[in-house]
Amino acid sequence: MKVEQLFVCHQVREERKVPLATLSFQWYAMYWWTSLVQVKLRSNGPPIEYWNGLKYAFKRRHIHSYYNRKLMDKLQSL
Figure 1 (cartoon, rainbow, N blue to C red):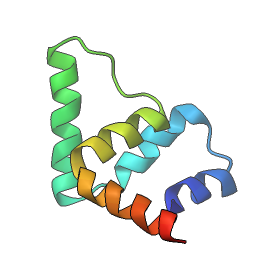
Figure 2 (figure 1 turned 90 degrees about the vertical axis):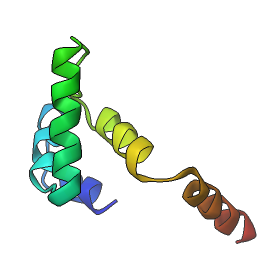
Figure 3 (figure 1 turned 135 degrees about the horizontal axis):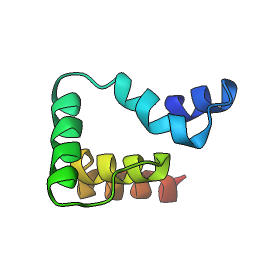
Figure 4 (figure 1 turned 120 degrees about the vertical axis):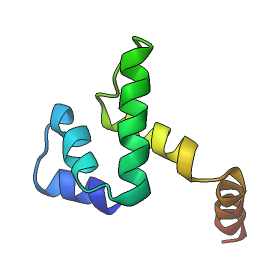
């Protein structure tokens, strides 16, 4: 991912990755992120503090399972 390359290039510490990445969210992604943070606050759930947690939540919400299967099929056909 380009974002991960930027993190490595700029030597971004783990605790700063989530705030920096969410700064670039626009439109629906920003609405999704704000809603997710509010839900976690209301339910006393743990906040998403680490990059892997954000990637997992984002993929779960925005990348459909058929897309993952399609990528795996392409990889296997190589």
